[in-house]
Figure: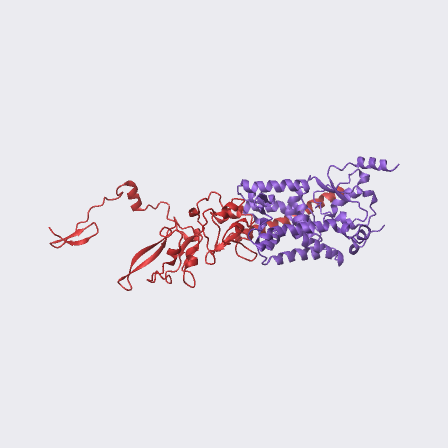
Length: 302
Length: 260
């Protein structure tokens, strides 16, 4: 079967699996992203007594007991020469352990509000067949990550927070919007017209940091049913980091297991949604034995 | 050229591209940060900030101090404001610090950007009140406004009224408000309370508000007290050439008729 057209992505899955199963993970993700904002807004909007979480994504206190701190911003603070105190460290350790288990870039696809903006740009690119644009290495984000730490050390300030669109957007929604819309518009247009997934997939050092955090994370998307793949290309078309899919999906001949082990897979689950053949599912990284899969097949075959 | 030579060449060029592009961004960001460190004089930091440099290394802009301020005094700087983006500040003339005894903003701060060692709010130094305009201050004009003095949480300690002779009228007293930097916390109540259209007393950052003596300077009267005696020529009682029947009383009475 030939590849589907970009604007047709996901249509087949809806026909075969029904609307809910063809959009389940996307909807869960949007719900999660919305909740991350809502829990910070109950207090300011409903008043005293309705607080769920205080603060924002860089550091927060939920139900007056659960401290969470972004380990990346804390690392920058450390490079800037500030002594880390236990209050922040406890929060950062909790966050680190969480993403270490569920996948670092789960932050990007399940929590970060900028993801909604860049996904929208990507969706419009497909819909209006906007192709091409600037091409640059996906590794650029790691260079930027290193740069933010070096400049923090040189200037003695947490410099990335002066321009970080992730925290600008989240903080602005919670504490007052101001001109934040302009920054978000810039990111949107950049992704829409200049480069596909240019921000989240190439430049953002926050995502780069979290990818390193989840380098060997437990929860992973897997393609256990990869022999059913009919090359419709829907998963490649929707995937924000499409380079991560190929080894797992097409690597059976080379002895590569079906689990997507690339640290830049965001565990967004959109490939699971759009696949009409149910090739993908959430799994864990230890469920990656090719031989095991082959033997299972043999059991079923006779 | 051989294939591996080509790919090596490409690798080097690609790496150089990435490095120089990112370095350019880094230089821009670093220079911008230098500029962003200059906090405008009207913006006051919450209690527990000693200097702006250390604060910008520590503040992660989470807003927990803003949330725990019971009087909603603090706000986070937004884009296009001249205060470092996302950091908390307040403006004394709009709404001053209430100086809570339990200092909830400092307790809430997860990183220690607001120094945890500050446990007594009277030790806070958010700025220093300064009479910036003697020409319009009502007390300087000879009235008994006294609002800054009365409203000060550390009345008679941080702001005292010093009587001076009113040379204009020749018979009245001017009560000059004097701010004492060893007590003033910079809470801003005086600036908020000033009855003028534009406050004549303003809380300024310490580095703007304070002078500093040369390190070799010694105050004679303090040294004398420390030593218990004069360190230069010993004080002698002054001898007056007075007309017959008069004497000078050194204990404060002044010129007296000699009753002897």
